[in-house]
Image (cartoon, rainbow, N blue to C red; front, side, top):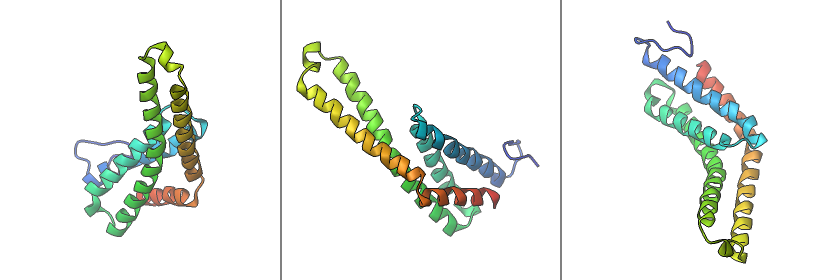
Length: 153
């Protein structure tokens, strides 16, 4: 039998699921301190891991406790939505800044350009505060415990 992290050609499906789930949980845990530091793409990487974990839990739900899977998927959905608000603000801000950069200099100095920057920054900071608050929330900490329980089971 392969150790966790190793998949052999004849590995049982449950083992493949365990290895993949373990990888995604590790990414979630590794990105939390990166998010706190404001590391570029950390929210994006955690959000991807959350989505992948939700997907794999749905795909292989028959191998797991159905009620526990439903609970985990709901909690991961909650986390993904919060992460999504910051990620959306990041992407929108970047796209608009790129569009503004293509405009003539005179237009980018206009009050509307400043208003756009201020509005985008405000949206981003509100979303970031929500993410940071979530990472300290009991619900998030319980989700991590539940994910560990999944891996242990």
